[in-house]
Image (cartoon, rainbow, N blue to C red; front, side, top):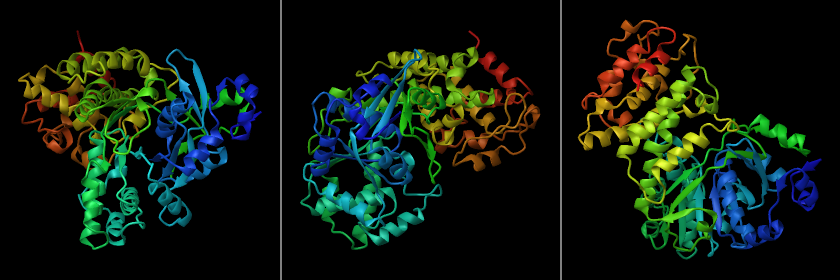
Length: 538
């Protein structure tokens, strides 16, 4: 039997027989180099980091283009470090699930250290201070989700933890952004050392969001007399501290039973997933799709690894923004959201199974090719049509990607304004009739119908978590599946809210079509399916 740790890497023949590729460099030497002179610190130790970002650095190490790895810091779920990093000597099993049904396996040694970014842990914070004061440190990066940058509640007030961090100052922060602001203050004190602070999270204008949060905290500290005003000048000087924008795309779903079973069958033990105290479902392995994209604004004041040699696109901010816009408004995210809400109502639990449903496929093809592509901005470095082609032909149908519509339907209220609202805006700006759209209003109406918590067979259905779930469901009070006449204009307040959709859909004339679709989807069992068919006729 094989167990993933540093000692076992010496069993080259054993791992070969288990069909696992090993690092092509001295893992312990790289770890020692990194410990002495780190160049890259990453916040967010979860799957997208391990399976994608860690894989990029592994590629550079394998090619001899770099001699140091990445140090991972976790700001939210410390069990990830204690249960997934430490017992396996920081190694990760990266399992790529290909569209043709095959798998490839690789042990990553590029992540050399795991640290809990916990202000109450003196040893861990001391180590982070050592790292941040290293003159050769080139970047700190983030995959902490968009929520990790948020300082305010839904009501707009500062979160209580943030208010406390404003009072306590550098080195005592509990919110992730306060921890990072404190570390940047230490780097400022060490001689105003340069650094790139790079969000790699899947959200638009991610670098701007990160910069705004850090500056908000720093300015409060200045006002409270906890740091000097020159710290703000340091953070705002792009020659010292840069906040590059990026676009990232790779699906890394929760660990799949089929993958764990295949590893065990080949004699690899100890790969069982764990559920942490923060309810993270995570394993020593990461299973992920083969397709991956990372586009980064090339703004690194202290240098950077040769990421372009690992397939990363390094470009200017406008191109990053265009690429992000292409993905989230046309080529992937709208398709995902539309098929997730309909998939839930039609009884699906796997995205790949949905791709066998002619009606759902027609919905997302119409959404992407017919309604999205005519108004998308072409970023030039990637072809929008080729991107959708890969999504439709390889990524979504991949039978080994255990991704669920229920997961993708999470937080939809926070997504519809970008995923559908931007296309609607483009139609209005270009003088196009918004009522020629079919897939976009179907997607919006389908989401609102989904919020009723009843599937297309009339059975009760669980709704994925969403910060506006209770508010929206209250607006829908009185609407009942099976009783189309129970709809008495309850959607108007929602559809006229620019905070949800990016514009007032009543004012621009699209609301009535959405209301009509929604009402038709209330007409008893099978109404969702029949409405889809009706509006997607050739």
